[in-house]
Length: 193
Image (tube, rainbow, N blue to C red; front, side, top):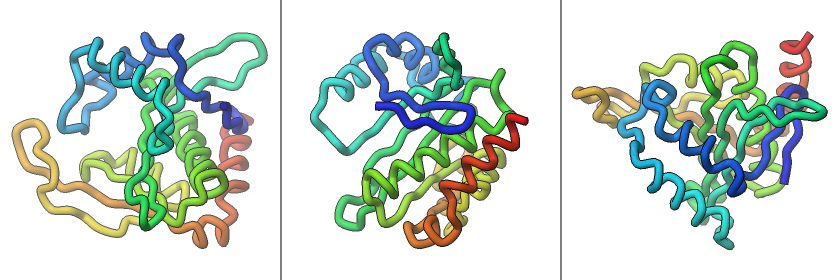
């Protein structure tokens, strides 16, 4: 399954993607603001193998590819997982490799995840969280229409000290009212021109 945008496409992870996924998941520079970064490539590989062959509809993991005609260029990871089944809430996560930062690929990937959540998964609410010091992630979530609802004080034990975590969300009715699907596609087109 692919989700296509203006400059990128999200493609469901497959066995052929596992080396790339291990590179991303074990990259301490890429996950600078996370509490823990996995260092065991075999554990990462097994975890994703389990997801690939699972009938589970709780997690949806995608490789972010540049949209090209003939070559597959992986540039990141985009994920959505069930946050609360009863409340129809989902959580998003994303990472774009540093050489591709500043080109709105992350914004487009996160926007495509929102579209997938509300149109395919029939979500009521989508949430995202980030280390309060991660201003880039916070700004990205705001660009796609998410609102900061809370700051959890000293929620994360990060780099030997307690730090805050920001909690963002967007409701289905807010997404529809703002025309976010069109907004994200237009942002991708403008960035590409």
